[in-house]
Image 1: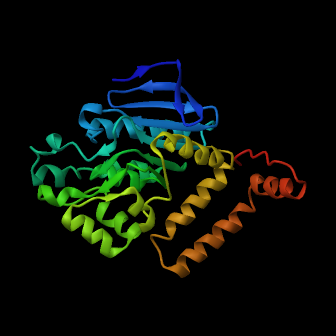
Image 2: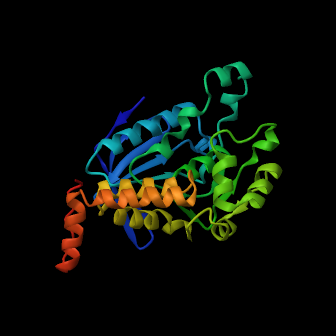
Length: 281
């Protein structure tokens, strides 16, 4: 059930306030945007520490569909309200399921919607990011963490394994040894180790997390959305191809930008020492 709202929400962040205009609230998330062309998705299941259920992931997918189609939005932030980013999947929802149900219905397949988003998605990880929560954060393009954030894939303790990309994305991010340790022991790592391992790109105090994520998202949103999408695809190809294939793809995409107005505008603005006015075409 969605609850529409038009109020402006101001929450204190560090030395200034981040003001966002509410778009709608569902049963499990709040969706808003800022004046800097940044969409904001906040997970909100406080009693369950934002555990991911099917309804929540469907609402996230709906919000991302809307932001992807909205030309006024250039980047999206996903974060969690309260003490957690997302403390895993909803085990009570999974408990009664059997093999035929999960295999026949390709259970969790649609949870990958975040990784398919055209526009860049930043994860602002506050607190716990366990199981599906860690997997959700890894589906995002950029991950920032608060100094209190904790990451883990504890599924092994429940007699199962990660099912939304944990064994694959974690290994690509931190390497085989640490990924094996986390997945086989179920033990988590703290934010400082996540930074050293390459799982996150920045760690900041909790009261600065959303502000820092928004600064980066706003910078990205100022760029050509067309070129940003091309660049994002090129980086992602690096995880799916050999180096030679990736370089060939990158060069083709580089050549393709010469067919856009935004490439001409960007280079002209640089030569003329002015700010580029991208038209996303």
